[in-house]
Amino acid sequence: MRLSVSLLISSLWILSAYATSGEQKLCTLTASGGDDAPQFLKAVKACATVTIPTSTTLTIATRLNTTGLHDKHLDLKGTIRFVPDFPYWTGNAFTFPFQNTSTYWILGGKNLLLDGGGTIDGAGQGWWDQIPLNATIQRPVTMTLYQAKNVVVKNIRMINSPNWFNFVNEGQNVLFDNITINAASTSTEGAKNTDGWDTYRSDNVVISNSIINNGDDCVSFKPNSTNILVSNLKCTGSQSLGQYAGQFDIVENVTAIDIVMTNAGNGARMKAWAGAGVGSGRVSNILFSNFLVNNVDSPITIDQCYSTNATACAANPSNTYFDNIWFTNITGTASGATVAALKCSPDGRCGRVNVNDLHLLPGAGFNATYICQNIALTGNSASLFPAECQGVV
Ligand SMILES: *[C@@H]1O[C@H](CO)[C@@H](O)[C@H](O)[C@H]1NC(C)=O
Ligand SMILES: *[C@@H]1O[C@H](CO)[C@@H](O)[C@H](O)[C@H]1NC(C)=O
Ligand SMILES: *[C@@H]1O[C@H](CO)[C@@H](O)[C@H](O)[C@H]1NC(C)=O
Ligand SMILES: *[C@@H]1O[C@H](CO)[C@@H](O)[C@H](O)[C@H]1NC(C)=O
Ligand SMILES: *[C@@H]1O[C@H](CO)[C@@H](O)[C@H](O)[C@H]1NC(C)=O
Ligand SMILES: *[C@@H]1O[C@H](CO)[C@@H](O)[C@H](O)[C@H]1NC(C)=O
Ligand SMILES: *[C@@H]1O[C@H](CO)[C@@H](O)[C@H](O)[C@H]1NC(C)=O
Ligand SMILES: *[C@@H]1O[C@H](CO)[C@@H](O)[C@H](O)[C@H]1NC(C)=O
Ligand SMILES: *[C@@H]1O[C@H](CO)[C@@H](O)[C@H](O)[C@H]1NC(C)=O
Image (cartoon, rainbow, N blue to C red; front, top):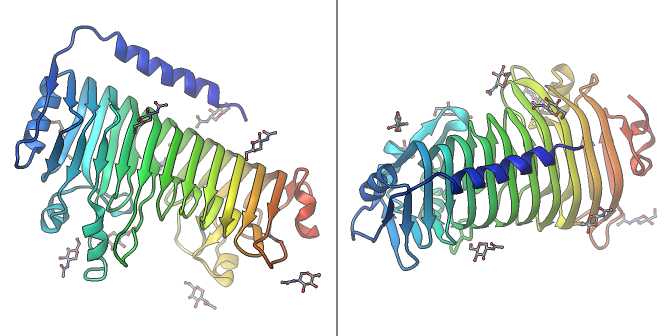
């Protein structure tokens, strides 16, 4: 697997293109005492560099549409904090048909840099606490890169998103680097659906050198995610890192390398629905490498009958085909007996799955269990799995 080089080169190109973009108008914002969205929007439109100083917290009470920008630097040293005004956002947040997503902020355009060491605060606590009162309340994604091309987001802290932290929707050449994500509930109501990143209809995305403490997916590759590199992440409390098929879906050329997953549900995971009337697609050229797992329920997982019982999966196997999948150098301990569960739909829906250098221990007091179904594994760790799953497709 060899896709990372062009991604990194294009990331560097973004930074240098920004640096040479000529004379700039610089603007610095201070808090107005009321809703700072109008002044923020005005500054972003008028100024090449918008600085939010260290001591400043901008209060955002109305939605932010910063799309269609060109050559902008958002220098966030201070804080952007969204106001958890439920009636306002449930009626006015930007919405996308995909998984009924809504969002506080859409950021898009060309040649953008968001950095500065500051914080984006999604004010999620109030939202999570609403869930028992209204289970269907539409909680916004904090930041959506929408139609963003050549964009770098780095050296930013993000806290308490009501829903996913970052949604990369129709992005191209996007780099996230050195992002610290933290979703921590202080009430009995846990943080919900706080994925670190979801990529969708996006190409050439790098997510690197970041720390994620959340309760849902660390990174999730949604339909039409191609040429994605995820490297050097520490994911704690996450549900999984992996791919998640939906409609007609292509997920191709994804590398996730140097990942530490602690107290998580799944480590490296791929899942797809089966049953009547679900989507179709292909997931190919996927490498999960150098994972260190600690207390993870299922360190490596393929579930191609996701949320589908065995009868329904046999009658209608998944139409999302998996091919050329690598699990390489995965080390650490599970929480229970299951160290690997690679379960494909019947009828040849998984081709070329390679397992190499798996060094996985079960939780204390358990015997390691390797589970497999409808799959023919190759690689130096295939022999750990039941005999019927060893072989060449
Ligand atoms: C956001 O602003 C752009 C540019 O002003 C406009 O074209 C677009 O329709 C707006 N998007 C939404 C969802 O309101
Ligand atoms: C989206 O919302 C509609 C209407 O509320 C609902 O019928 C549908 O099941 C939702 N879809 C998803 C994927 O949640
Ligand atoms: C629950 O949330 C939904 C979606 O945001 C909203 O339409 C509905 O009015 C809310 N229900 C109540 C009882 O507040
Ligand atoms: C990473 O970002 C933080 C701010 O969130 C900053 O303090 C730190 O210096 C950055 N690290 C690097 C290596 O740039
Ligand atoms: C994904 O890309 C394929 C091929 O271009 C297209 O047919 C399909 O509609 C796309 N799916 C989504 C969800 O965008
Ligand atoms: C995936 O990578 C292969 C090999 O580098 C390349 O030929 C193919 O075009 C890539 N796929 C996509 C969707 O970019
Ligand atoms: C295997 O992964 C570990 C991290 O879990 C890393 O330290 C080690 O260098 C990797 N080994 C190889 C041969 O890449
Ligand atoms: C399996 O799922 C199908 C479709 O959802 C449902 O009709 C059927 O009753 C389920 N069977 C069992 C044994 O749960
Ligand atoms: C583990 O396997 C050994 C040997 O087969 C068996 O004696 C023991 O009961 C098993 N332990 C558990 C917790 O299943």
